[in-house]
Image (tube, rainbow, N blue to C red; front, side, top):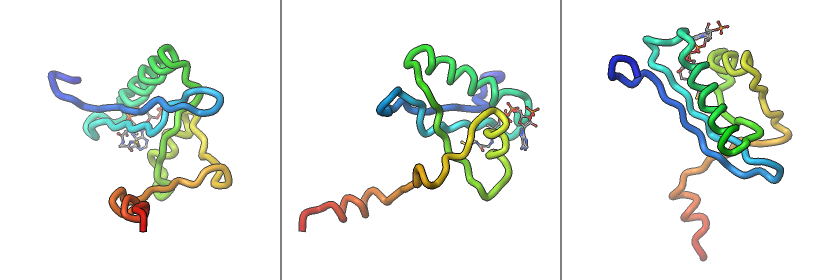
Amino acid sequence: MKEGKIIGGIASIVKPWWEKQYLADLELFIDPNYHGGGIGKALLRKHIEAAVRKYDVGHVVADATPKTEFPLAWYKKIGFKPIPETELVYIAGNAREIMNNLTDS
Ligand SMILES: CC(C)(COP(=O)(O)OP(=O)(O)OC[C@H]1O[C@@H](n2cnc3c(N)ncnc32)[C@H](O)[C@@H]1OP(=O)(O)O)[C@@H](O)C(=O)NCCC(=O)NCCS
C-alpha cells in the first residue's frame, strides 16, 4: 500500500510433496510505476519467510515465460532455476473440455 493505493500483490498456495510441503503457483506483481524500487524483492522475502515459519516449506515453484528475458532473469538472479523439461512438463487444459472428456460414454 502506498498512500492508500495497492501497488503490488503476491499469492501462492502451500502444497504437499512426498518429502516436504512447498509453495506453488507463485504470482507476484508490482505496479509498473514502482518497478525497480525493491518492493518486489521485499514482498517475496516476507512471503517466503512467513511460509517457512508457518509451514516449513522446502521449495518455491513459479513460472515465467522463456520468450522474454525479464522477469526470468529477475528470478534467476535471486536463485530460482529452470526445472529441466525431463523432470516436469507444464500442462494445462480447458476445464469444460476435460470435464466432457471425463464423462462416461
Ligand atoms: C518482476 C517484478 C515483480 C519485480 O518487482 P520490482 O519491485 O520491480 O523488483 P525489485 O525492485 O524488488 O527488484 C530489483 C531488481 O530488479 C531489476 N528490475 C526491476 N524491473 C526491471 C525491468 N523492467 N527490467 C529489468 N530489470 C528490472 C532491477 O534492476 C533490480 O536489479 P538489482 O537487484 O540487480 O539491482 C515486477 O517487475 C513486476 O511486477 N513485473 C510484471 C509482472 C511479472 O512479470 N511478475 C512475475 C511473474 S508472476
